[in-house]
Length: 161
Image (cartoon, rainbow, N blue to C red; front, side, top):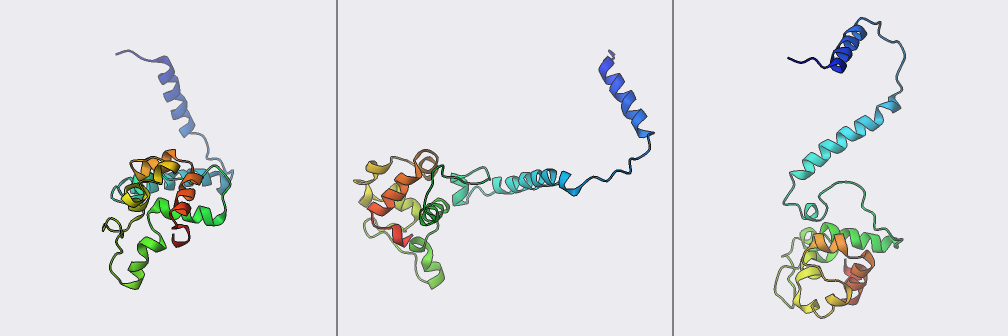
């Protein structure tokens, strides 16, 4: 068996350190904050990774702040976040009102944010003017936020989101 000189020295130093007196120096709690935050972020990410059927997970698989890179009005940011999570007044108010889920007039499909942004045949003629995306993930990963907002305004749904 070969002996690695560095490992032997490290083992000796570790054993010697065990016999040293324990330091009475206090460690400020702020030194632990980054470690605690990292620990909880890892736990949260692990929990999030198990949520594969969540609409937002398909768009944002890694947790963290969402920034749009450009200055937007508060209203535009709210609309964009609602679109990202797939929940809006237009598509989900029926839950609070205890009504049936609304349908797209043109397609007779359930009215969802994904349907409006990606699938609705009624908007096929306008959509290419603003973006081309086959999925919500692709849309939010590749299309500038302003284009998405402009599309929602062009189809007349901005104030309903």
